[in-house]
Length: 159
Image 1 (tube, rainbow, N blue to C red):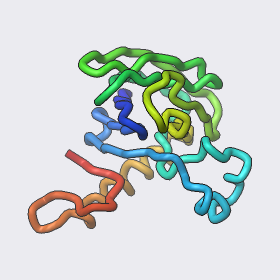
Image 2: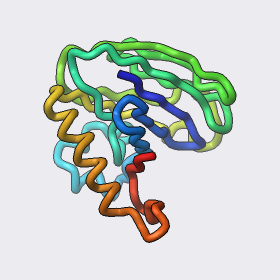
Image 3: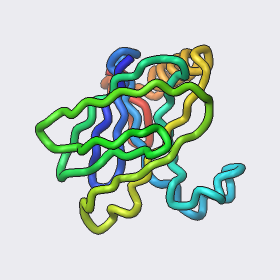
Image 4: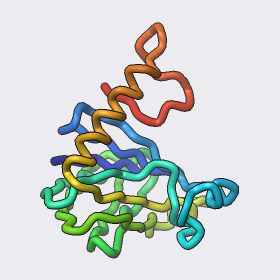
């Protein structure tokens, strides 16, 4: 499986080329929304609106790049760290053995909102992952407008 990660000022984009080209944007969860998400208070400044969802027990190739400036994709609990450099694709891999949420953040000074670029990875069972992919594709189909483009506010795109 392949996950392509693109660092932007100041959010992350996750693309799933081996799963129908899903495209997910992930930004920091504002403090106002923390209270509405059960259990998220303990991860203030690390909680995100959309997690990169990955299956456990699967070797995952992660391609890392930058869209604007140099970023650093770092998730210490998974042993992941790779620079996201515009115009270049760097590659790492992982295999997650336990379900759960894993957090990291950009560890490269990339601008004024560098401190607000958390990374959230949610590791789930293979069945839950397949169900999530199916749900994202269905949501995208229901969001498609007349011209075949998702309207503003849609988080997942299938190309």
